[in-house]
Length: 426
Ligand code: 2PG
Ligand code: MG
Image (tube, rainbow, N blue to C red; front, side):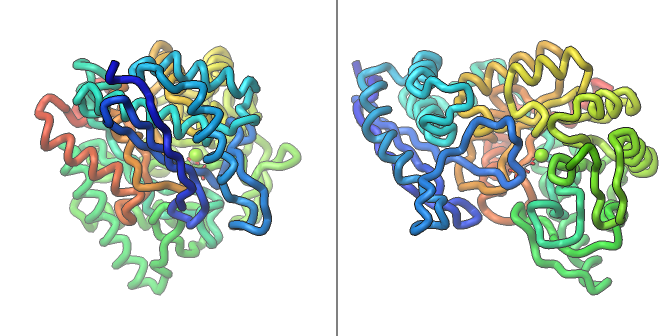
């Protein structure tokens, strides 16, 4: 057979923060290859599958991944050599069994994921199909609405903002190309505005501006000004999305909003977010509550009853069990999907499937530490996900995903921009 795995080459490379990560290439019998590299988070949820590192303090402050690479080239290769690369589920099952732990702490979620994704790419290449077609078949038709992060705070920037991400959401564009053009134009109008007011225009980990602001509200006002300067309407064309990443400032049952010198209970926090929501055109709120504050989540979801997306990231960690718990408790209405939170393609697809069955919106997401790998762009199209989050419209590790979608839009006339579908739905 020509589709059998005959070789694996794994290497230690660097991510967008200059921290080591894993690159894996899978080779099939007929010489066809597929490769993938894995991203890495900064505001990592405690319930995520484990990202394993060498912990050798003499190299990269302990962040090396040479052991992971060794395991892939030996133990993992032995376990999946000779198997048809199209048997994704079976291969992922072998990898999970080889690890044998609940949170993948033996081999590492990063180790397993690099192989899982490289296998999928090799199989797509073998089938001579684009990755999204291979994964999604002929029913994939949506190009996602991008959530574009143009002001960075929290763990992604060295500024005073408690809220981690201020994103623009071009729901009113007619095409993905128009959506990206709007976002780039808004980004540069925002840059002019910041400069004019003597605010710094240096950027954070995801390519958004990392200026200091008066409080957590001021960035929203700047975004709205920049949207209007671009001659767009902040309700109809481009709305605001937030990733509060509240786990990062939650301790002893209190939410500590340092920039405003406030300490909130979950009820206060919910009220704070509701006020923001009522004051500004906010499209979605991600991680408005901490990862284990289920009560806070239910409260937030009960108090915001319009079609605002209430998105669980650290809360769900792309994990079916946690998502089911959230569904039962009515904790949210949307889920952020990150492949490396769970650590294999099959499990990620299962979580997306479960979310869709319960009418949850799925937002396919990058990590703050990224590589040029654009797998998530294809994953978004393959799964008809209405949204993608890949940071700012600057820096190539962010753009590789948006650029892939621009190319898909031009090359496959069957694909439709999700904004059109979303506006029909509401
Ligand atoms: C998030 C992500 C991506 P990180 O919180 O949603 O923006 O950040 O990768 O640091 O967890
Ligand atoms: Mg998040």
